[in-house]
Image (cartoon, rainbow, N blue to C red; front, side, top):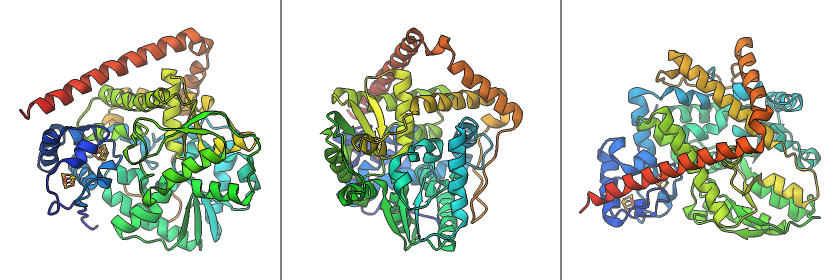
Length: 478
Ligand code: SF4
Ligand code: SF4
């Protein structure tokens, strides 16, 4: 494997602009310069940006010297995982680990959704010049593709979590070798299928295939890539989707972490679609080039700064809730995202905090404005995912081998990797947990309000702790 070195230390003037601009740490100039030096030479725990970086990559776009400060974060994470591996909780996002989130959730999908997954995987075994690639996290919410616009389309839908999301998660985790392996295997797979054009249902995968893998890994696909929002806009412009029921609601676009790539075009296209759907586009405090990640990526630095499981959960909830609060503060009725992962995690956060904002995927907003049914079963899926996480945590507590640090295994095949299936006794436990979540004891309004208040309080206290840590870091300058 090549040793990638993307951060250009020779160009960096240690001006600190990147960490002043950073929407997470937002440090004053002196502290930003100091943290930039620590991030290069010190330990992850000493650096505020490395400890809390949500890998949003905003810093790259402000650096006047094109030093690639975001890639310094990835290099430091890569170094850390090579030395000691990843904490057991990270097993959730590796499809070849037994306790991954896709294996767990698949047990709870509807029969129709399971049929979709099978069909999408079968389409990977045939030759197609154009496909709609589902994407890693789409397989947790297959119902999103059960909408009229996809039933009317003649483009075959293909995909599997066994394709590892085009390496998107691995890249953000700083797992450079794994990303490269996934990207090369995917290239072989797509070329063997003779694919010439891909419509990427998952925005992040469009950025991976079109920009990140060619630019940073030198892996060019020579395939035309069309992100989902571009495809939707084309469908509206061509009249294949007619806006019959313009929405008269306030909509905040959540720009996902990879929307800055492709010259920021996904951000502009999302807003144009909202406008064409009749929605009033409102902006959150952090938007476009300064957008916060949905919060999910807050788990990444926590894996490397030796946070406890409690610390990982708190930073994750804090970050997700922060994004929701920005939507509420902008008085948005709906927060819309083109990324299935953001859709899932923001929906889970909304469910447990009961913030007054609806989370929708872009395709659902378009269906709604087209007067078409938009499959709205996210409440159910949120409970499925929560059940899956509780099940994983029980296994984490009861089994040392699940808790242990591990070095993720490389994917081995250039075809679709079959993912593990839950054994019968585990599936039974999971189904039991799932049924408890549906019990009136937990679904009644008082219990949900109490849970929401407890989560909000925990998140508020954690926010105060973070503010204290930041203040302490800044005061060391003087
Ligand atoms: S990476 Fe860029 S913005 Fe950051 S300190 Fe270096 S030169 Fe300045
Ligand atoms: S990637 Fe985002 S969160 Fe991380 S240091 Fe850069 S701007 Fe801050």
